[in-house]
Length: 439
Image 1 (cartoon, rainbow, N blue to C red):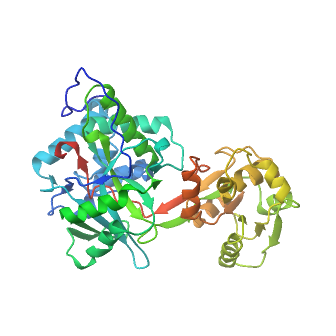
Image 2 (cartoon, rainbow, N blue to C red; image 1 turned 90 degrees about the horizontal axis):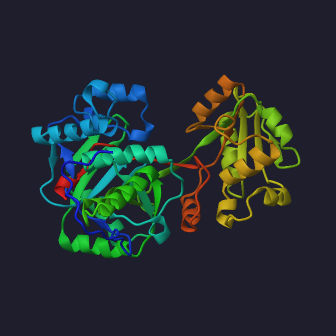
Image 3 (cartoon, one colour; image 1 turned 120 degrees about the horizontal axis):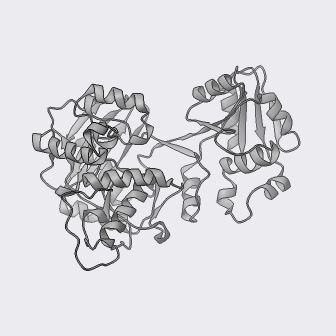
């Protein structure tokens, strides 16, 4: 991993990182594209949802698309890709493509469609380890992804994308977020994701002080960006271990949303069992769950039945790839379910539909190996049905996990089963960067 050329030289002293005693979201000078630049051609989805074809398309859209920073390509003729991203960022700043705002601010950021608006605060979050109970993860991370992000973020000396946090309860921060509606935004643009994006800057000292006081006693759950947050923590630890002392690595770019006011939409992540038809999976579940035969009903009716059943307990809709077989599974056998679920997990974790699905249905009832080849994942119903059709298998459709259930599990220091919940929309990459040179 290469060090950023603008980081301070190590000193001979060493002190541990200065962890906060509460939730702290500080103003920062945002680095943003010149207003003359077409934001539709230079922004991108988050790095972890772009495939190779997507990278190529974004590069084709503009020579200054942010994808060249977040996903620099491996090109032997051009040297280390992380250092290449660092030089690209420096070059864009020098050319005025990216410009720092004149003063620090907390930014109010909104993404909206006709039916939904998500709005929250963009700021520099004071980092704290999960065991301190201030910023709560709900998923595990993979070391390879963190290593890649750490090498990139250290080389560029910047936070290129925010993590996404949720909290709840109103207060001065939520009031400030709601209060910008009557103000002219810094930007107002509809992008390739079909959403309208707006951005405002909060700089009034009294208002910023009220927001800080309101947030300090709260906790927040990571909705998206677990690997980025782990990267922030490792970058901070490395800087302090090197004797660099306090600095911009003690905070990380964060989008903080009050889920009770302008919160995200919550979607399930569905499963696909290849090679086994829906009627066979339902047959194997006889005696273990109550089986409702929905043959003759259309998919919309099945999804409605799934949602209604989910209000009282775990429920799963089995759909064959051709859509001809629908079975609704509800009411797991209480004693058998209790034996199948890990006894050392909390009641909140044991109530999750995804916990019941993987530990009870997949492993115990169906007797399947619970790995990514046997249980596949799709983010929407159509994709799940297409995968089921292609594999001669079954789409297992789920209800979304409520935000309060995610919070309950995270607050207990536990992690959700993999691929449990999808929060949307995700912040668009490239609208605001936090460059450590501007700290």
